[in-house]
Amino acid sequence: MEIAVCLKRVPDTAEADVKVDATGKDIVRDKLASTINEADNYALEEALLAKEKHSANVTLVSVGSQPSEEVLRMGMAKGATAAARIDDAGLGGSDSIALAGVLAAWFKGKSFDLIVCGAIASDDGNSQVGPALAELLGLPHAAYVTKLDIQAGKVVVKRELEGGFLDVKELALPCVVTIQTGGNTPRYASIMGIKRAGAKAIEQAASVKPDSRTQLVRVYVPQVVSAAQMFEGTTDEKATKLATLLKEKGAV
Image (cartoon, rainbow, N blue to C red; front, side, top):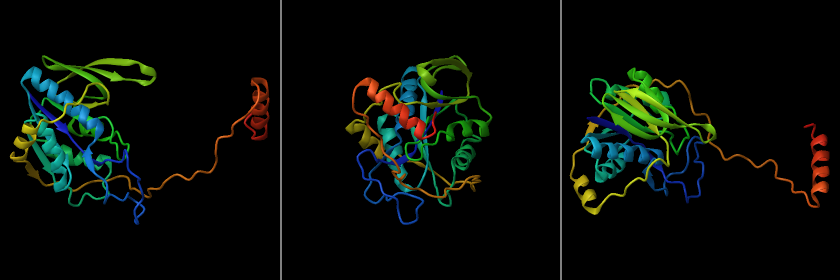
């Protein structure tokens, strides 16, 4: 069985003071560490669990410059079989649909039973690449999957819905799934795994010309234009004050 996992290298902003750069279209990245996109980490773990259960090969693929190989090697250190990097030269400003097209061009002509992506990118908040990739490849797909079970010729997935509900579906293989965070516990790479991954070759591929339909106009920190108003007093007094304020604002 052949499984592919799409990985994205993103800046780690969890503990950082994020600032917009001089162009107004990106953040200052000089002092930010980079890591595997969080949801992609869970997608990788699902693929590795499937590898162990079904003796599958797991191939990692990422679109990016040479530093993106860091996340590919980390994925191989955890147990992935092989990796490929699609060079991002000329892809600056490309939107999610264009990036899905770049990935689709790489996948065409290759034979994978399952393509796994993270459900959402932590840097731009988009959830479009996985579903768009499935559409471009003409494959069935399921998004926001928390658990998958590969069976003969199909995969049974559990999807997270609004309100805490779960949706169970069957997809014929080959297919594309995007994995939500929290469905498993991503493993750590061992020291020996890291050493072995450092010696492995990574396939190098050129990208196709992107076809972006949207354009990033501006990145900015939202301005605080109002603050919460706290009411003091008894429950009845607070209710009266709230009703008065709502009437003054024209809300009721």
